[in-house]
Image 1: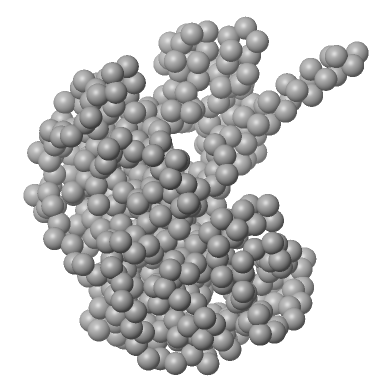
Image 2 (image 1 turned 90 degrees about the horizontal axis):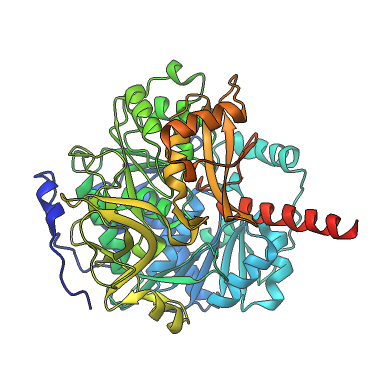
Amino acid sequence: MLTTVDKIWLDNYPEEVPHSIDYDERCLHDYLKLSTDKYPNNNALHFLGKDITYKELYTEAKQFANQLQTLGVKKGDRVAIMLANCPQGVISYYGALMIGAIVVQTNPLYVERELEHQLVDSGAKVIVCLDLVFPRVEKVRSKTSLEHVIVTSIKDYLPFPKNLLYPFVQKKTSGMKIDIVYSDRTLAFKPFLKAGKTDEVQVGMDPVEDLALLQYTGGTTGPAKGVMLTHQNLVVNTAQCIHWTYKTTPGQEKGLAVLPFFHVYGMTVSMNLGVMNGYTTVILPKFEPKEVLKTIEKHKITLFPGAPTMYVALVNDPNITDHDLSSIKACLSGAAPLPQEVQSKFEKLTGGKLVEGYGLTETSPVAIATPIWGKRKVGSVGVPWPDTEAAIISPETGEQAEIGEVGEMAIRGPQVMKGYWNRPEETAKVFLGDWFLTGDMGYMDEEGYFYIVDRKKDLIIAGGFNIYPREIEEVLYEHDAIQEAVVIGAPDEYRGETVKAFLVLKEGKSLTEKELDQYCRKHLAAYKVPRLYEFRDELPKTLVGKILRRVLLEEEKQKIAEAEKVSNDS
C-alpha cells in the first residue's frame, strides 16, 4: 500500500505559494456573507448589461433559502439546478446551500433519458429550470421524486429594454413559445423569490462531513454517477486557486464566466472563486468568440478560465487583433489537453499568462497545475497544488512507478470526494487506501512535474503497440493548417484497432491526406501515424468545449456495422 511520496515538486513552487494552507472551517455559502460584509456595494455579477452588487446577491440568496424552507426543503434534501449561466444559477446555488440542501447541477442540454436518470438517482425534491427546458422536465416529472419545479427565463435578469425584447428573440432563435401553467407545484422564479424573507438562515452544518454538491460525471463508461463533494472539498479547492493566482487582488478583479456553472470546473474557478475573493464575475450564457473578445475588452477582464477549444477558437478568430486584450492577467485551461501552439499564440496576443491544469470532478476539480508566474515545462500539466499529493502507480507492480515510467495517476488531498452517491462498490474500485485512482495514464519527471499521456480507456492498441491519442493530437495541432484535431482507435480486423484522425481545418486552408501522411511520418513513429483521416466542419463537443471522442467512436462502429450488414445482405 502506498503510504508516503517524496514531494519533490515543492522545490518548484513560486515563493509566494505556500506548501500548505490554513483553511477556515466554514461552509461554502459563508463566503458570500463575508464578501458582502467587505464589499457590499461592489458588483458581484454583471449579466448582459445588468449589475448585481454583493449586497443584492446575498439578499436574494437569503430570500431563496427561506422560500425553499416554506416548500418543506430540509438539510440533506437535494435541489437540482438546470440553468445556463445566469444570475438565477448563483442565487439558487448559494440559497440552497444556506439551508443545508445538496445542490445537483444539471446540464440544460440533457435529453429526457439523461435527466430522468439524474433526478431519480439523486432523489431531488425541487428543480430550478429555464423555461426552454421546462417541457423536458414536465415529461419526466411523474417518474421522479420532484415535488416542485421553479421556472425562470433569461429575461428575468435582463435590463430594460432587453427584457421586453427577449421573448421575441427567443421565439425567433428557438422557434418555441413556451406556455407554462403555474400552480402550487410549478412556480415562477421571480414572484417566488420576491415573496421570500431576508432573515439569516440558521442551520447547523459540518463543513467536513456535510455534502454541498452531487456533481454527476459524464457517464462514458455506464450510467452517470453522482460525485459527493463536501463544503470543505469546494472551499479547499477555491482557496487553493486563490493562492495559485497570487498576483490577483481581493475585491478588484474581473473574471469572465463563460465556462458553464453546471460543470464543476466553471463552478469552482469562475463562480466560487469570484464569490470567495470578492471579484466581479462577468457572466456570458454561452461561448461565442466575437462576444468573448468584445467582453474582455469592454470590461477589462483580468481572469479568464476556459477550455482548450475556446482558446483555439479565439486565436483563430480573424478579428482578434482588433481588440485590446491586455487586461488579462491569468487564464487556467482545463477539461482537455491544451496544445502548446495555442498557448504560445494566446500569450503573445494578450500579454497574459495561459497555463494548463489537471483535475477531475472527483477532485473538486483541480489537483495539479502549472505555476502561472513560475517554471513551466512543455507538455506538462504542472505540479500538485498545496496540500495535494500525486503519484504514478505502476500497472505491473501496483506500487509507485519510477521517474519517467508511465502508470496510472493517483491523487490524495482535501479536495478529493467522499465517494459516489449510493454506489459503495464503485467507490471502492477507485480508491487505493486514501489515494483516488484517476484512470489517467501519465508520468512524473525528476523535478516533480507531471505529464498526462492519455485516459486509460482511450489507449489505442494497434498491432500490439500501445498508442496514446494525445501524442498524435499534439503533432497535428502543430500543423499550421489544422484548427482542431482528435484521434480515436477505430475498429480494425487485422490490427485490432487502427489510428483515425478527425480534423477541422483553419478557414482558407487546405490539406490532403497524402500531405498529412508525409507530415506525420516526419514527427511520429510509423506505428503511430494515422491510417485514416476525416475532415469535418466541426467536431462534437460538450458545453465546456471538451471534444466528445466517444461520439466519434460510436459513429465509427455504426459505420462498420452498417457496412457489414450491406455486405451480408448482398
